[in-house]
Image (cartoon, rainbow, N blue to C red; front, side, top):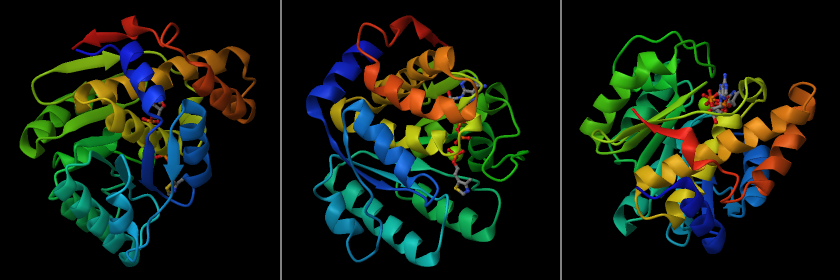
Length: 262
Ligand SMILES: Nc1ncnc2c1ncn2[C@@H]1O[C@H](COP(=O)(O)OP(=O)(O)O)[C@@H](O)[C@H]1O
Ligand SMILES: Cc1ncsc1CCOP(=O)(O)O
Ligand SMILES: [Mg+2]
């Protein structure tokens, strides 16, 4: 497998353009995260232009956090173009179990064969058809409880599936790893998962194997979160420290050994 250190070097070298269809809460933080990491974000979601833009972006990310029917149309258009043109695309199924609109959008988007699905444990359990204890956008289940669902979704959809939490889990249905690091302050800052999904897009644009790309992005977040926690006093000071740390991570400090076979 390509080590995170090598994937980080490839991502920085490519400085990929990433089309992010993300939510109102996440837009600013996610764009700043990509800039800090060395990628080029563009938040382009409307149905009138989302498909056209997908044809020029290096990768596409779709997040259903603040949904409306018009946004869903943009998501379907963009993911169709990505699938047709062979561009990697990443789905973040925020609170996909919570309402009919979210369940329907997630089911339609899963039919467009996302290259990668990145969610918290409750979201991945729900996509796997199991009961989950999610509290809106926040996970109520452990990563361990969602590992079997992740393997099942990966096999059925042909996607790489990443379940994040205290220790992350990534599988493509045959390979699987766990990634440690980060900080308990990360879920206390809104949209850290959404920003991570956009970073997964940046790695997927630059690293050929989507499994390795996903592991690289998660290791980058784990390294940055651990560094930021050393200087943060709480969620408020964690946020700017985290952005600085995302920029400061290098192939030497990303920590290839935080990735362990599962
Ligand atoms: N308790 C924790 N300890 C360390 N890192 C965490 C913890 N909870 C979440 N993270 C990290 O925060 C980031 C966002 O993950 P998560 O909170 O699961 O997503 P979401 O915001 O979509 O619910 C990931 O990089 C994950 O590894
Ligand atoms: C609070 C909130 N409400 C709708 S989307 C959103 C952000 C969710 O961010 P994350 O999934 O990274 O916790
Ligand atoms: Mg989320």
